[in-house]
Length: 89
Image (cartoon, rainbow, N blue to C red):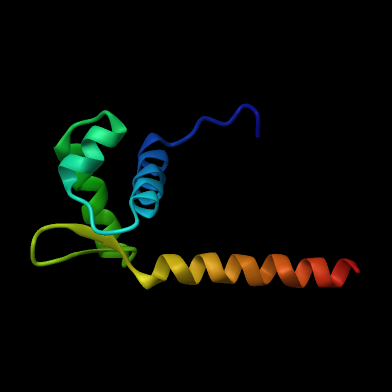
């Protein structure tokens, strides 16, 4: 895997999700662009994809927030890790 080259758009989308999680509430495109040091059209394209996939929603004031789909992934991962640790004991 050391010769692997990351897909920049995937990396950017995960960074957006991480920034949104750290913000702890709805965020604007401007906030994300400033936090990531990039432009608003780039952020908008990523958010549009994340909305289509159901990981992000936009509220009536044009702010974006993470959906419960993100929490589901986190909980499923925690449960999986717990079950693996139980199996090892």
